[in-house]
Each structure stands twice: as structure tokens, then as C-alpha cells.
Length: 116
Image (cartoon, rainbow, N blue to C red; front, side, top):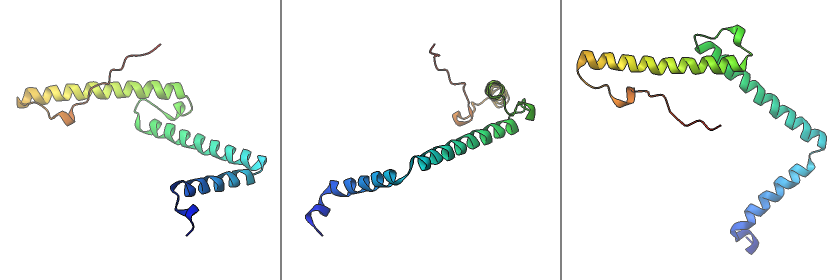
């Protein structure tokens, strides 16, 4: 082992050189293709997430599948309803049992100030 290999930054510098060399070896067309491929994967992940919301939010239908604003608004409304329902059920349990509901079962709507 040489003195250069024992220096803590020599490995880091070497790895950076490999990466730079690898990036330099890519043609402009390959870089563009990589970018396009990455963007397609990102869009597919977004579509799958929206489709999942359409499946789990009762107020959404497949007609809303591609309307992002409808998905956001109806998902938000559903979450607010869930928080309110949780509060109602906790109150009912406390009235019927006379004891407080454990804190891990209590959901509260997060309140964060909106910035304009």
C-alpha cells in the first residue's frame, strides 16, 4: 500500500474521478435519454400515487383520475372528515366509559400558519 492510498481523502478523490470520467464518457444523447427515462419514471410514480388516492378516498371516482386539483381538494376534505370523525368517536368513548382515550388514538388537525 502506498502513502497516497493511506491518506483519508485519496479514496474520495479517486471515487470522484471515476464518476467524472463516467459522466464524461456519456454522450449528449445518452445524457438526454437518461434524463427522459428518469422523468418518465417520476411521472409514472405520480400517476400511481394519484390512482391510489382515487382508490382510497371515497369521494373520488375514476372520472377524477387525472384532475390533480380534484384529487387534492377531495383528499383534503376526506382527511378533515376523518379528523372530525375521530374527535366525535373519542368524545363518545369518553362519555360512555368515563375515561380519557389514550393519546395515541387522538388525531388533531395540524394547524400551520399559511404564508401568502
